[in-house]
Each structure stands twice: as structure tokens, then as C-alpha cells.
Image (cartoon, rainbow, N blue to C red):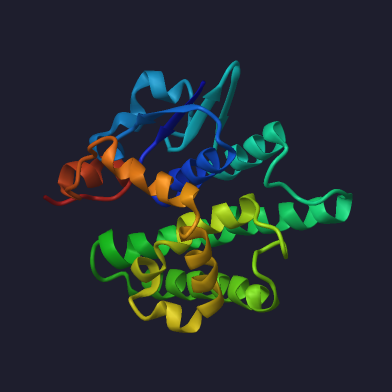
Amino acid sequence: MIRFYYNLSPNPMKVALCLEETGLPYEPVPVDVRKGEQFAHGYTAINPNSKVPAIVDGDVTVFDSNAILLHLAETTGRFGPAAGAKARAEMLSWLMFVATGIGPFSGQCVHFRHFAPKGQDYAVERYAFEARRHWGVLDAHLTDRPFILGADYSIVDMAAWGWARMVPFVLGEGAFADLRNVKRLLDTVNARPAAQRAEALKGRHAFKPEMDAEAKGHMFRAMKVEG
């Protein structure tokens, strides 16, 4: 059985969705990053980067959410690209677009808009612009297709779903007015039973709810934290 180290943030949730879609048996193992559990020696042996998610699949350990999605697609033969080098190249391009663009810029936008000390207007504007730009690229791409790779639902849609759920928190409550195709994709995935089962993980374990000085100290170690 796969051991799935997770919390409820966007990157673990995309893996939760994939596990539910594939029907693979798994044990969810909570890692409370607001309590610093990601730095425990037992966990850093699994993920030396002290982030979630990670999985242990038999004698195989995989960390980084999009690497896990790719591993699960390849081992099950499901939700990957159509046959051929061209389809695989398109899948890898969009999967890495989420991994290196949408995820990091959305995450930094959240950090500087909601959690960083005040007075960092340049950083707020920079990351908000880049997050909005990346989401706009995806929205334009989805104009004439139901899913990111075309007609078929794939791990790339799962990767985007993890972050698309957070678009109002990333860019503001009205953001979907300019991202109607992304919202359509989000609604389509949300309607899937697997997505509803993934969301139900919220009731499996209790995570520290407060983003207090202790939590910020664990999550933003390079930042001066005031209580």
C-alpha cells in the first residue's frame, strides 16, 4: 500500500486526487507543517527538501507533487498522454508549466499578499502579475478544448486543479471573471467523485489551524517573524 505524506495545501491535494482517480490503495499520513513536522528526521529521510507531498510506493520513494503524478500515471498506465512522442512532449510541457510557473508564482503571490511583513509592494505586484499571467496563458489554451491536453482528462488537469481551487485566494475574489475557462475546468473536475473523495481528506486528520508566530516560524524560516 502506498504511504501518502500530505497536508491540505494545493500540491498534496493534486496527488490525493490522482490516488483517488486511479483507485490505488493508500494510507494518508499527515504532516503538519505549521507544527514543523516536515523537519523531523524520519520525514527528511523521505523528502530531504522538507516539503509535502511525498509517497512511498513499495521500495520506491517519490517527492515533488508533479513527479508523483507522473509516477502514478506511468505505473498504472492511466491518465497519461495518448501514444506517441508528440503527445508525451505536450503532456510534459504543460505538466512542467504547472510545476515551474503556476504553482511557484501562485504560491509566492499568496505569501507576499497574505503573510509577508507589510511594505513589500514590489514583491506583491511582481508575483501577482506573474501569477495572473500564467493563469491567463492556461485560460487561453483552454478556449477550444475541454481539458489541457485536449479531449482527455489527464494528470495535467489534476495538477492544475490543486491550484485552481485557490485562485480567489491567490488573485482575489473576482479573479475567475477573467479566467472563465479555468473556472470551467475547475468545475468539471470538482464534479468528479474522485475529487469529492480527495476533498473529504479534510475530515481525516486535524491540522493546526492558526497561522501564528509558531506556524510562520516553521513555514517561513528565513523571514523575521513577529508574534
